[in-house]
Length: 288
Image (cartoon, rainbow, N blue to C red; front, top):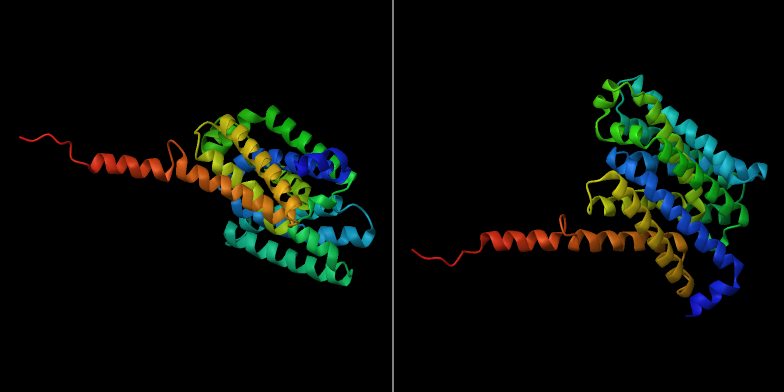
């Protein structure tokens, strides 16, 4: 009750809740494609690689969103360029680019003497979100939802079978780069909520939770968005009443939902699978 009463009074808490819920929804949407395409490591890489852009933005005294987006897109293009034009495989190119970018970002942040800002960017603190952060998140969510709605069929086919997508005449490389841009936008929009280190949890965990419940992409996207939003609400609630950092609590809430579904899912749940195996192994009781 205290949380609800404070929510009606304090504007910062209202902005935090709106921002985190929108982040949970949009991460659920783009995360569904990331999980299906096996690109979880790419999401982690971009979340780390944007740090130099954040540092440069602080140095120039502009919103970190702009610098982070530019560096994130350049990093994703760099990863693709290395893997496509050399013998180095995709996972190795990801490791090379994001570790180098992350290291540069830490050095730049240190030079800028922004230790407090570094902590917030690394671990997130949505309770300190500004109105500009909330509106940027809303705009990013609108862009992502619009693109996914307009190109859902193309994204569907290319996510499940890239070879078939090419046979149909779809430009799979352009689709891949488009998803990279959307992933970068969502990652940067999520920094204030869960931070660089934990943003991958919001991209992967709700989508993985939904993946255990359905085989239909549209249903998966809806369920993933719901789990993302619920994780944000639960995380904000406990971080506020227990005075804990919002990012880690939101990430743990998402993990808790995943564990519950992993155990109790009707089709993929560990509990029902164990009961089914036990039933199959039990003797029927019929004797000759």
